[in-house]
Image: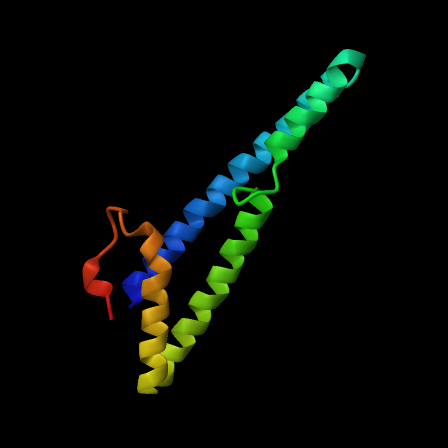
Length: 116
């Protein structure tokens, strides 16, 4: 399961890179908006564009970052449970990591043999 934990951490790292890129895009959008905000008839368009760019939906970088942090905590707890040696907890932890990996099942580094 260490390989699966490594796989998951690599996917979390990739997601954090996405967050960094989109946070930079957000900063650039805010900087660009300030130019248009000085032109009265462009203020509404600039505000709308910024609202769309900054978003608060499922792809909101802040939400994605919180999701990554939560998943990293789950991963650590699962690793702790696997070290407990208690069969039921070990199985539950392995199953949890397996389920966490399913969104990336089409990734070239994903391995079916990780299934508990």
